[in-house]
Amino acid sequence: MTLPLEGIRVIDLGQIYAVPYCTMQLAYLGAEVIKIEPPGSGEFLRRPEVSRGGVSYAFLMLNANKKSVTLNLKDPRGREILLQLLAGADVMVENYLGGVMESFGLGYEQIAPRFPRLIYASGKGYATGSRWERLPAMDATVQASGGFISVTGFPDGPGMRTPTTFIDMGTGSHLVSAILAALIQRGRTGAGQKVEVAMLDVCVPAMTSIIGQTLDGRKFVRPGNRHWGIVPCSVYPAADGEVVILCLSEAHWRSCAKLIGHEELIADPRYKSQGSRMRIVDEVDGFVSAWTRTLSRAAIVELLIAAGIPCAPVRTIDEIIADQDVAACAMLVDSEFPTRGPIRVLGSPLKLSDAPQNPGALARPPAVGEHNAEVLATVGLDAAALEKLRIDGVI
Image (cartoon, rainbow, N blue to C red; front, side, top):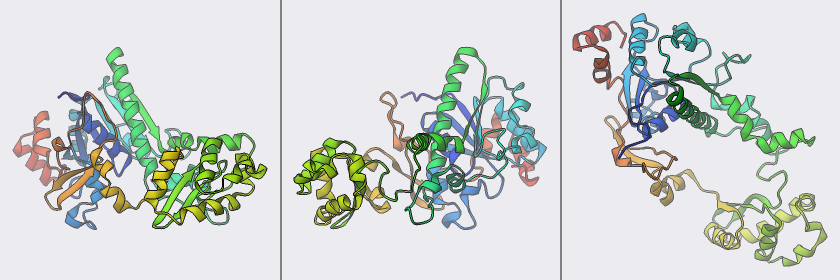
């Protein structure tokens, strides 16, 4: 079976989540991904000093199907080896702080003349040229600067951040799209280019409804688990947990009113529209909650599916890990690592009919520098040269 990116070589200078998630998707699409890590402890996310088996589970989940090569980019010899690797590469991906690649002599303008076909992909916290270009960015900090924290939480409480890294993962996925577009364009023109995705820029489309409401002259107030324009919509108690119910349309509301045993509300003028129900939201949620708390999550969801009403059980992480659909879609894939034994790594959400996933074909996540000999032999470094570079701290 031929994968879409077979024959494409990617040099991965990524760290933490955003770029490693990007290159993970490229690897699963068939690219050869060579992960460049600092000698010794490797990429920061490995966290060997605090992680069981000398490597964090988060690193393992994001780095299957990649090769690890160690290079000290602070050493001129390490940078020269990287440049030699770039001569045979199609894509380089990095997410260093603004100015760092230039300090290494590896900025786009510095190396583009030497590698005119190279796709130079950058994942940044803030766009090149931004006043915050050199501000260190993590998912949590961009949730703050991107407005997410200000709109998350309850009206009478502080803003809240989510512990999930959805901005990082969104940045990685957007960067995949940019890289694929640049490869298509290179196929037409023969020329590479620089592509960039900034985490802050990913935040803006994610808040389309909230920004639209503000541009429309309305003040946004943190809604907690409710929705600013849809009623009923909230997290409701069930006999064995919680469920989310969202009545987007009036047809949904009418079906819901019948289900909860209050069909008379359909004709009540106070309940005639989203706007009118919004004014009595506590009353509406009281009727819905009185119904949901008598039933299990599964029973509620089955009834709402039959009625065509958007809903979902509020599930725990343990439930997600054990979910049959997560397994069927190969989103958590069995693998192993020498110091950890059996593990599970991320699968890809990209499903291609002519290139179906084969989870059993994924190479396990690499140990630090595991592929030094294999990869560096392609630029003429033999065992004796590698040993000298190792002793000098270059690899």
